[in-house]
Amino acid sequence: MGLKIGKYINYLNPENFNFKNKCIAIDGSYLIISSLKSRYVWNVKAYNRNYKPNYVIDNTMQPISHLQIIFYKIIKLYELGCFPIFCFDGIPDDKKRILPKHRFELFNAYKRSYEAALKQGDKKLALALATSPKYLFTNAVRETQELISAMGIPYIISPSEAESQCAQMYRMNIADYILSTDFDVLLFGGTNLLHFEKFVGSGRNLRIVGKLYNLNNVLNDLGINRFQLIDLAIMIGNDYFDGIPEIGFKTALKLIKEYGSIDTILKDKNNLYHSKFINYLNIDKLNEIRELFIFPIVLSNNLNLTFNFPKRGKIIELLCIKHNLDRTRIEKGIDRLIKSYNELSNLIEKSSNNLL
Image (cartoon, rainbow, N blue to C red; front, side, top):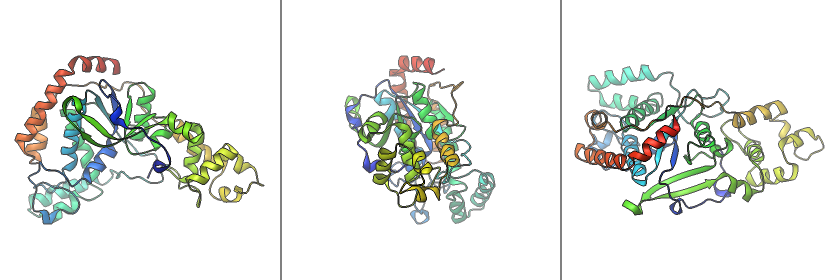
C-alpha cells in the first residue's frame, strides 16, 4: 500500500536534472512488480497467446517481461552515465499490515510442481503454477538478481524492507536518488524520490521522464517536519497501520498543524478528536509505529557494492537459452552495455572504491 500523498504534494521534473555520475538506489520489488504488469515486450518469442492471462510468457510458461524491461533499463541508466544499485526486501517486518510482495514459504514446492508439469507437457498447469502468487514473485526476484549480477550491477538484500534500505543508502551519501513509487521512502528519510515513467531521446539527449519528489521541498510546502509527516501518515494509513477512519489527508494536515502531534490528541480527553483516535491508537502503539520509520532495520556496513564487467555468456544463458529472447537483439543490448561500461570505467572504479 504505502503512503498515499502523491496528489497533494508538488514534484520536480527529472528532465531538468543531470544524472551523470549519480547513483540511483532502486527498489527492486517495485521495479519487478511494475515490469511484470507490462504487456509491452517486443523482443519475445512468446508462446500461444491463448495461454497468457495478464503476463507476457515464453515457451516455458513463465512471465518474462520483467527480465527484458530491467535489462534495457540498466543499459539506459548506464548510457545516462549513472550507477544503479538494487535493493531487495529481506524478511518482511512482522508488524507490517499489508505485504504487497509475496511470501516465500511455499516457493520450493511450487517450483518442483511447475517443473514436473512442464516435463509432462501440461502447459496449462505449468502456467497456473508459474503465475501463482506463491511462485511468481519469488522466482522473478531470483532471476532478476541473476540478471543484474551477470550485468555487473551490485545489489543488497535488506534485513527488512527495500524502501528503508534505499533511504539508508541516501543517508549514507551512497545514493543520490531513490527509484520507487512508495512514498514511505520519504518517511524513512530518503530525500530524492524518483517516480520513473520512461526514457526519451538518445545519446546526449537521453532523459528521464517522471516525477521527482524532494523531501525538504515537500516538508516546506506542507509546513511540517519529517516527524509530523510520520504522524500524518499514521492518521491516513501506511504499510504498518490502517489509519484513523474518516481522516483524510486534508484533515490530517489540519490536525497536525493545529495540535503538533498525535500525542496531544490522545492525551487531551476534551479534544474533539480524542474519542475517534483513542479507539484505534494509544501512546505505546503510536511510538511503536513511529520507531519503524525512524529506526528501521537496515544494513550500514560491509555492503560490498562493486560494479563489475558484464558477463556476456551468463546474460545469454538466462535471457536467450532459458527464456528464448531474441539473441540478435540481446547481443546488441550487451554490446551497448559493455560500450557504456568501458566509457564509464574510470568513474565506475572510483564509485566502487567509494562504496566499499
